[in-house]
View 1: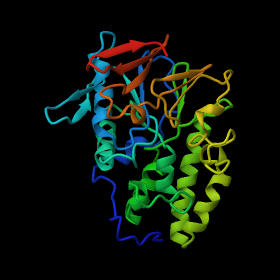
View 2: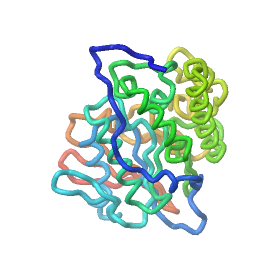
View 3: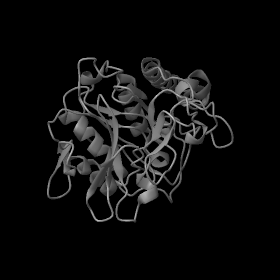
Length: 309
């Protein structure tokens, strides 16, 4: 099964965190109708742990919202035991220096929060963990993962710990979005079925061949289009926000870089961490209440701003 033998890029592993997989099968694909719970969403952390901590703690430093996390003196974040759903909306790894620690953060909050309160979505860089024969970036964390770590990640996906979409109060959350309405339940079943196919392929010695078939078997999530994969008919992990029509369904997505949360009609792109790195502020999250969508952003002076994207 091994795909790499590059001594210049030593192997990487998934964090050795304990996750009770029995808690995650199956997860709800939408927020229950009777919940008035705010939804906090952050995407494209890419291993930039400091910026992620700053964005998540900004929620509780605002004058509008309670904390979604608490922070220890060493920076470690914990679930704040307040009434929230927290969505990690894809691309947790691959560009920064703290990829394993970022995944430890996600897994810790998944473990500490009540079931269903923390969502972990695939992005195209988690797709690279699943399909290294299709998306192989050897200098990145996803490209250097050991075979055992890839199999472990497939277990997380097949069990339901990692999904692709979530229907909030008014907005649907996925990494890159879709020009059509997003069926979260169908998308999440595609993800689980793809992981199941890949696990069976490993057992049959056909892992590489089946990887190459996954984008066509499950195009709603994994579909690629064009030379960079980001065409208008690409799947929920790849479509560029430039292709999002103004009359799309209400969506919160990441994937395409922006300096501030950017609206195009009914859809809002929240990928701001990478574009604002080293500028002393600009990182933030989106918060959806039953009545409105807000942007919570760290200012350059260290304060926090709340606005409507």
